[in-house]
Length: 112
Image (tube, rainbow, N blue to C red; front, side, top):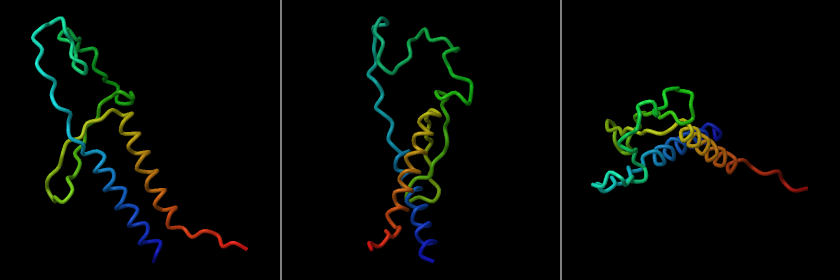
């Protein structure tokens, strides 16, 4: 019974930590630049080709978006977009945190 409760706590912890980690606010929009010779960091140049976009879904830089639930809301959701590499890192971090939580509840061996 205790292990079932501990598993439920671990799953809840994983879901909450993933939601909090993924629901980060978007960075502020950069200020408008009127000089065409200046490129703002994080902004694609005006001459960017459509071929710059990654189209292979297995590419680590392919951007995936999914809808995540908002905490304390039954219906509200937020759209979260990340690259495959970022989704994999978030998944690994959630698994690591869950494993730590499960290991913290395990009894240690008694000393002889």
